[in-house]
Image (cartoon, rainbow, N blue to C red; front, side, top):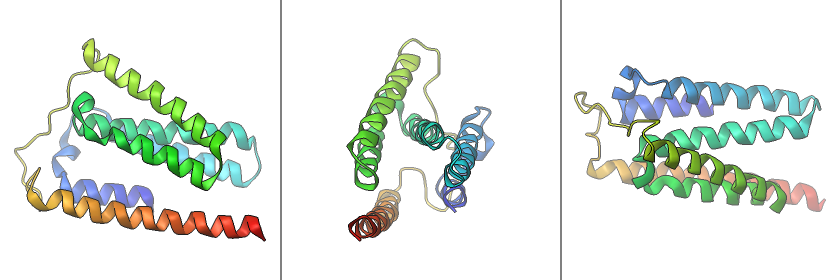
Amino acid sequence: VIIIGWWAMCIFFYPGLLTLDQPLLLIVSATFTITTICYGFILRGIAPVSFFILELVADVATQTVLIYLTGGAKSSFFTIYIIYCCSGGLFYNYKVSAVIGVLCLIFYSGLLLALHYGWVDFFTYPFHEIAFFQPNAFLNNWLLLALFLVVVIYGIRIAHHFTQVREN
């Protein structure tokens, strides 16, 4: 469901991403696939800690791609790392939050170094296509805010459910 939602948002807000030569969408698709496979192994009890950490790595990699797409070093979306770190603490515990925090610092540092030393070019969105909304249009941020608030509220609902399960 998450990967379908992500692809729908890309097509809706940024259809030009589908025409890129860069492997960004392949990386995101691969991380979603890795997350799904890890989740399957975790549910079966096969090396749950290792696959859980691999799942966290895949999630942080996807977030790093999103930060790269939204401006890299100049992006305000680095805050997605903070939200993810908080979510790990809410859903699990402070140890998971600490692992996520370390992964975020490693991946973000890698992105900043890659951009600074020219190992990776700064991302430029192909503005020649017109999406349903123009890139950087007035309503884009509002719609993204509404969408992310729904996700956050749903996440808190899940966290509340797991808290009640633990209490019982």
